[in-house]
Length: 356
Image (tube, rainbow, N blue to C red; front, top):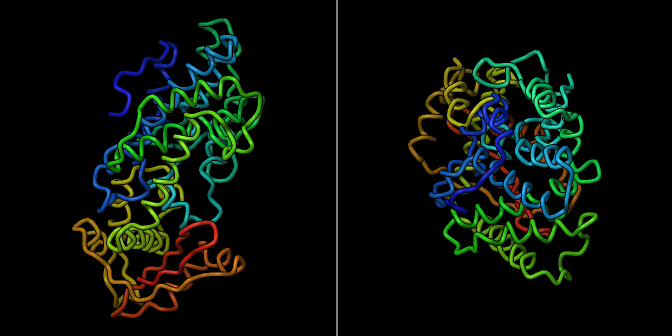
């Protein structure tokens, strides 16, 4: 628990129960069910988003927003992660051309494009319900609640979009602080609310956080640096687990698991779905996919074969492409070898190609 009790307005209750949002109860805040950072396995995108909505409520009050403006801001904060796939960014490394922020905008806006389709289920065989609940709330409050406006804010659009998606925003104020807390770092739970106070006085996204005199912003920057350094310097077992999970997802795609099933699912259910595929690697002679998942769940540690530094931006961009990493695995695969490829950014000017 980071903040204790957070209070949200009564009108938000129906939105907390729509299938688009309920799915996030099964999507971890972490990109992998971590081995080294054990407590980071607990928090979910669902509780993170509720906290961001609470920050947005405070920010709206301090900015003196109208009731309609406040509702749009709080809804964008609550629902900014609705298209986050199972295991979050790990899946985005595997799914070609997928951007969870853009997909969230499409889903909330009811746009039939990309991986969003208003007439197809998003969770537990249920269709999206956001637009319907917006219409109902509009009638009850006598206001115009526009789903398109909420959707636009998720990707930083509109006058207030920078509060949800900017250089420092309500989303990463909570995300960074929450992750640090569950990774064992001593954090001040008041910092995200103080960042909300700071953002309430901003007309646009702050451009230079390094020179910002606000103490809460600098404390948040310290948390962010600590968090990234912890990930960059994590143990080999943790890196191997990330590579293992990416490999399982690629196997799922090769086994014919529908792309929608890779996105509109929960962490644990995705592994179960992939495990049901009757498929094995290397022309049927390799390890069955269900065995791979069993070994992953039993915390088997893969072995590092090669760690190759990348010092050219063009190489890094090419290797980060989902097609490239999948192709490399296919080329290297044999009945006796299950290659797991991962490209890891250590910092702005350092990256590695890992073969595990």
